[in-house]
Amino acid sequence: MKKKMTTIISTISIILFIVFLSLAFSIKDADKGILFDESMMEWVHKNINSNMTIVMKGITFLGSTYFFMIVGVLLLFYFIKTKHYEGIFPLLFSTIGSFSLNAILKHIFTRTRPIEYFLIHQGGYSFPSGHAMVSMSFYTTMTYFVVKNKKYKNKNYLFWILNFLIVGLIGLSRIYLGVHWPTDVLAGYMMGFLVYLFTIFLSGYKKKEGF
Image (cartoon, rainbow, N blue to C red; front, top):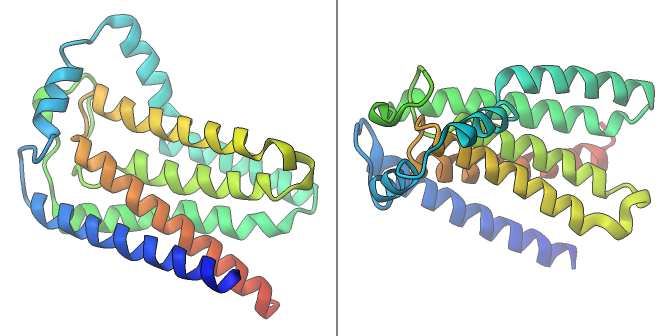
């Protein structure tokens, strides 16, 4: 069973990586949208209103560097206080690793942001979306350890639904606020999920080896 699961995860990882590379080399040094980028951005920005913009600014904060710094410190203290040391390495690795990898990828593919759609100011390159990538790795890693707790055994599906709802809304907020092309967000999700899978694999290996 464990071997079968490893095969499935490996296959998913390879597929995600191939799709990501396909997108990445399609947008390298680009300043325009590809595939469904233009049509989706135009549709979203035809339905903008001031109240929704305020909501989206709040949602996008849930995927910001400041938010992860605050939550990260709080979780670190919580893990130490409750002696739940198992979760410290994975959360730190998935978050810091995702931030670092995202910065490297942005400078490799140097895609220009969709400036004409900006509702807020945002500097730097566009691909892949840092908010989407780090949110996917951070929240999904955290959810993984939450559902491992037998206390929540019968509510696992609720935590996973909430996890992907939050991550999905954060990605949508980046498109709504006009600071990312949809393919930036999609690529961010894929790389963030790959970081999550690698984090869980590494965490299991460390535990198995007694590190």
